[in-house]
Length: 103
Length: 236
Image 1 (cartoon, each protein chain N blue to C red):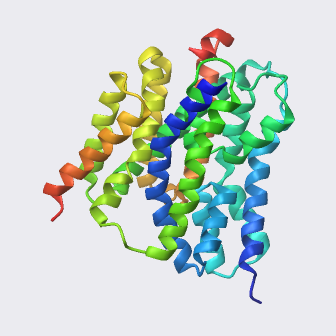
Image 2: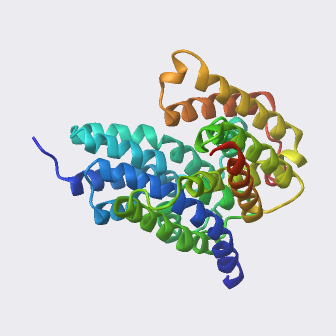
């Protein structure tokens, strides 16, 4: 049996939207439970950190360039650079290093 | 209101640039799964999910059942459930259903990251500004990837692919500087994620599944060991 690509896309979209919108619409009050509140407080930092490393090493052609982007990005963010500057600094780091590392 | 919207658009630019690069490579995957440029565009416009869409395209390529598509999408996107739970706490309790439905359209790692990083109560206008810039980039990049395949030089794709990670760093590092416990758990997350990617068994799980497991375990440990004291502290 062949499946319709538009039905596939529709299913993906419906499930994804439900996942995102149900918590936003059903949880109306501030959560009182201290553990749950603390858990949700830590989730964003943990999940972004988990997704950044070691994935950044595999995103670039040379893992060394990815590692350099990670370190320089951390330093830039530590010094107070915003979203866009940190992104650009990371991209430039990789671009310049790979001029030497990948031929 | 207008100021927040403009700030959202400004912060949406780096996200949009990163999206172009990532969705371009997603488009290449869509193409090999047999999608047209328009189908790739629609999939991205309706889903706004990198890992989730990629997983979905593998389901399409395998001509697997619709049920499998449901399960795959659930697992690959489960982290958005956690993010939306966290985001629900950022909304003013009396925020309207319309705002909740619209913000829910684009809860991605990046939009979530910059929305949660804003001090105080969530202002939907800020998020709308960012979505308005970033979401079209995501959809167009996918369509371009389907059509143009390997148009951009590899070197440029390689450099652009760290734009997203740079943004993640800009979200997690400043709070780590202010709060030692956040810093500690960012470090723990780096190490655990590295270990999980290289350990036997664990490394066989998909990246999305590892992210879910590690996020739940590490955040629960942090919450149990260092509960957040009050609202004020949670915002700092």
